[in-house]
Image (tube, rainbow, N blue to C red; front, side, top):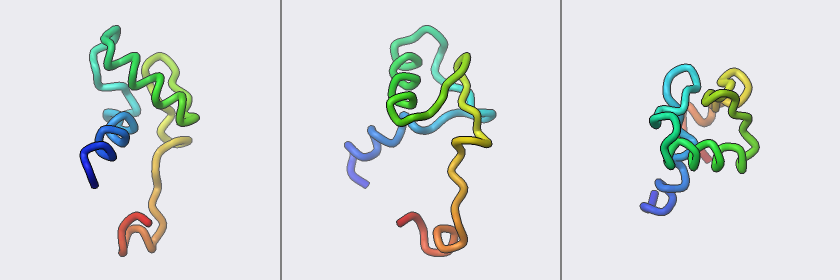
Amino acid sequence: MDSEAVLQAIWRVVAAGGRIALPKGTRGYHTQISKLRADGVTVDNGRVRLPHFQWTPDLDEMIWGPR
């Protein structure tokens, strides 16, 4: 994965419980929320509903990796 792909993917990473890990009120916090919402992810009060948006690999992905 090249550095640009890493930078694009990093905004999709949230902390335990779906919490935005960046300090509330910072530019990074608001940027992450904006990027998640642009991807169609609902963010409420700084949290993502993991049961709805969490990636769950299928058996092929678990064995062979992402497609």
